[in-house]
Image 1: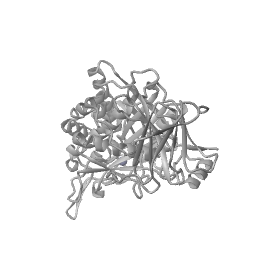
Image 2: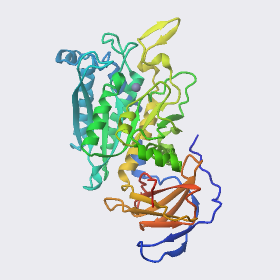
Image 3: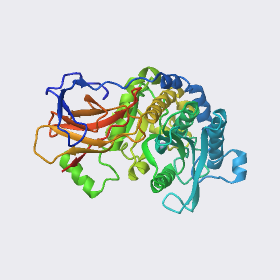
Image 4: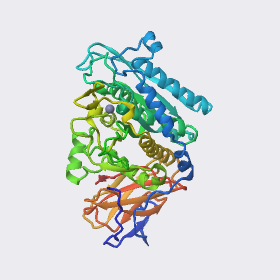
Length: 469
Ligand SMILES: [Zn+2]
């Protein structure tokens, strides 16, 4: 577990120098020293997590598996939809589920589709219509509503041969489980209100080349959406193999950003920034949520500092390529007999991605961890903007400057730091509402970040500074 917090005192005395403008003389003031503490539990979020139902999740996964195949190349004409076989039927059912949740919350969810024709490619023999289905829970605060947090899973599936439109491909774990997480988060969180916007997404085309998520992320980038976090759930079924660990879920995050420019890479190389991508800040945030809400979620996030598993990819990559912070949730141990396999028995081994191998209680635990993360971020103030670390002079203290969190919901800022070798934030200094702080700590020895916090203790994602000469 990475989540263990170190409690040893910081070996350097920390004095905080606060100044209310860059020209006023600095005022020396003693600051408290403390190891990072878990975020405060919001009882409203905690109560909502109890509404996540393993029974609902079971029904949804079994329903998705019942469409026979959800291969992106499978039928989507009206006759196939009416017959209930193929990706078209699955798509229509997902849409109707979101619409049902929307009706139950008095129209609070806007249900939308993102359709396009993918041209022929390696795994797409002829131009194919692909449709992403999603629901938007718009934020209640005009300025904060521009901030978006998003959960996604892919509803397409595949048999052994990813061009085989005839074979059954129940895809219960890969990825009806992730689709069920998006659906259940939508059902439960739509009963609440948040200042920021939450999008519940289900995409297709993942198995043919991440086509659906690529289209969606590109559209979001082109339209200037401010997506702060993407939670991709792919294979979160907790396959019931004997070696499975049902107490944990892996959270994969990238190191060097896929969207980094040459200039970014030079800076990252020079300053040791390879462990501080937006994706990694999001992963640490999930570890924080995991500790705070463990009693409600029942599952511990295990951070894996790696984009994805060997030989495998996923939809979070599409969002990372557009510069959005994204992570992937996946069960701890996969059974490869139960993925990407035609349903059959050979030499006494059962192959195929069947619902009977899925642990629905486990999927519910993972859904609660996702819902807690979405709700915490959507309740939090915007992160501080334009954070800089002043590097004009050689000196043994560190000065950070930033601009106010947009939306006016931050009641204070917190400076975080950790040793360069530590996986998670270790130390915190609360600095009030100032936009500048000087710490008697050498920037050469630690990594800093700043986050915004509201009056109830909801934390924004931390931001790491860029150096300013
Ligand atoms: Zn998958």
